[in-house]
Figure 1: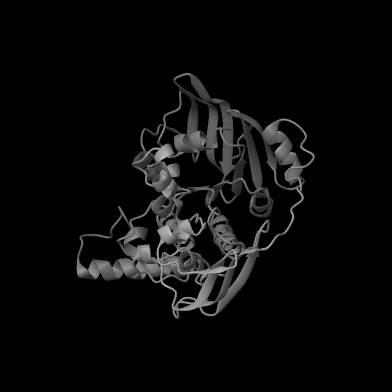
Figure 2: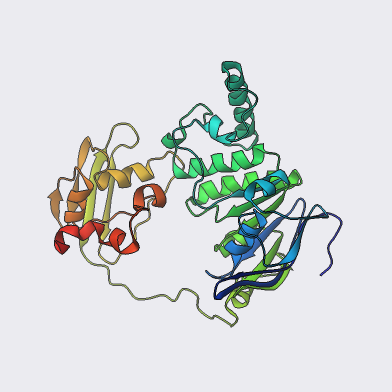
Length: 364
């Protein structure tokens, strides 16, 4: 494996052992400046471990790392950041009660914390957001933004640090197709600026669209690195699983039944108005739209997390009044929220306790 002079990152012979587990075995991974390099593999292939070594969270058991041609040792994330490496995690890593500008410059506040410096920070954050094409108010409290908008703030934070290398871990997991297209415009701008981008994703269609090169990991080993031109999704799947896969998502017959959820003319008079749809048994109904269109707000209102001002909701042909999540659960409605970590689970509880929460009354 030869490395060109424009190589931003060169990881050679990287292995990582945990007690009883060899997570990585002799992995070689190189990324050039001004390129998007995708990393794909099944769950447990070693992607996260390799990236945690790159961002200083883990030390490799063996192997060497070069950044910009110089061999480096990273013992903590601050070491990686000092070398110009930034990571955008799949889970939002920001502070909800701070403003967008404060989050963009978190840990890098410009000078002493004074009124004038705050104004300077807001102007700088606005310039970064504008440069990335993100229509977000830098003075807005972060917690007021949608998850997709918060992810753009996370990317703006990484970009504002003037990185040499950016790692993005499943960046489109919470984004719609339109939002993904906006993200890709940002990534192409970063690539044109000469930044090396490592893009981790399970969405192979997106990898084919945005990446210049792709590396496939399987069972902790690097299987192959190839230019994206000429490779197909089927090729990546074969390399990921180690065999030919003729039908990734086999179609299964489904009988469409009666209406199980009917929403008629619902409105909260602020974020959505006059929304109606019908969902039948055995059917998957998609609800889509741009950021701010009200998709999440409609779902939250149906589940009783916010108040409906107008309209009706019927379950199995019977009109129901849902003013709280507990009433929604009793009506047979479940909800997987946009913010899985913040709203979907209780981190201090076990997996068993979290799964049991909606049916506690049946168990006691």
